[in-house]
Length: 421
Image (cartoon, rainbow, N blue to C red; front, side, top):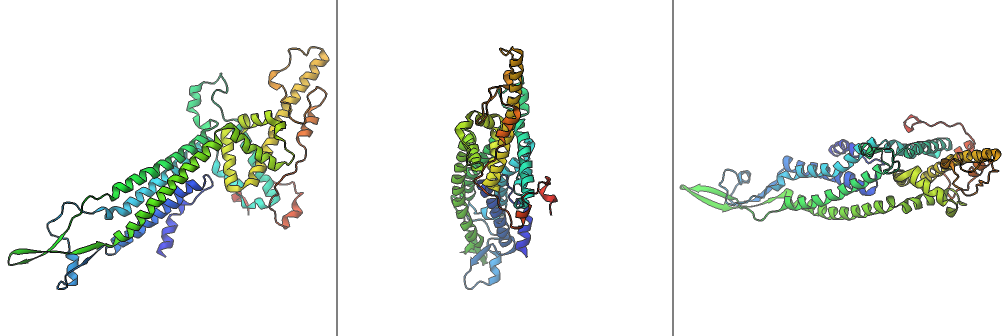
C-alpha cells in the first residue's frame, strides 16, 4: 500500500515522446531511483533505530538509549553526513530532472509543438487505414507549413540581424541546438554529481564517544562500540550511484556526439531524407534529383525538420516517418512544378511575341527535375502528372483484417487522438 502511494506521487516523472533513451536514463530512471531511495532511507532513519550499540554485559538494555547523550565530546570530528542522506538524494533528483524541465519549457516556445506532433504520430488508431491516412496527411501538411517559415541567418539582406536574434526561437536550427545544449547539461550534471558525491562522503577523521558512570565522585569512562545500521544500506547505494554515474557519463557523451554528427552536417541530413525516399519508392534515384534534394533539405525542411523527423523515427518507427517524408517531398515537387509551369507559360508567351530574350523571370526558372522536360512544349498538367506517378514502397503499413475492407474509404478527417473512441 505504501509503495503504491509513493509510486503514484511520482506520476509526473512519466517519460514523454520528446527525447531519446539517453535522456530518460537521466531524468526518469535516475530521478525515480533517487526519490524512492530517499523515502526508504527516511523511513529507516526517522521511523526506526538509526544506531545500534554493543554494551558491557552488566549494563541494562535500556541504558543503550543514553549512549552519546549528555557526555562531553571526546573526539574532534563527528560522522554526521548520514542524517542528511535523504535530503541529499532529493536535491540530486531535482538536479537530474532540471535539464528535462528546461527542455520542455523552451521547445514549446519555438512554435513547434513537439508533444502534439508526436501524439499524432503515436496515435493507436494508426492501425486503421482511414485514421492513419488522416494523421499522416495532417502531419505532413503541418510540418511543411512550420518548417517552411523558419528563417535562416544570412538568408535575406533586407532583414535586420538584430531583430532575428530577438526571434531566435524561430530560427531554423533553434530546436536542434537547444536539444544538444540540454544533452550537454545532462552530461555536466553527472560530472558535478560525481564531485558532490566525493565531497559529501569525505571524512578525514572520526570521533569516539565515551560512556561513563560516576563512582565516588570520579567519572569512569567506558568505550562502547556502535554501528550506524543505515550506513550499511547507504554504503551500497553510494557505490551503485558511483558506477551508475560513470555509465551515464559515457552514454551521454556518446549520445551528444551521435546527435551532433547526424543533425548538423548537411550531407548527413540529406542522407537521412534520401533513405526515407528510397524506402517510400523502390525506383527512386538519388542522382536524378540532386538539385531538388539539396533545396528540399536546405530550404524546405531545414535543420529543425530533420530533428523532428528523427524524433518521429525514434518513437513512431521508420514507416510513419517514411510516409510523412514522402508526402512532404511530393508537396515540394508540386510547388516547384507550379513554379516551373509559370516559367513555361512565360516562355511560350514570349515565344509568341518574339521577345524572349531578357524578359524571363529569374525567380521562376525550372529546376530540371528528373522526368520533366522544359523545352516549351510541355504543359503544367503534364509535369504535375509526372510528379504524381504511382510509387512502389518497400514498407507495408500494419492493418487489421477487418480494416482491409475499408482501404478504398476516402472519407477521412483529421481529429485529435483524444477525441477518438
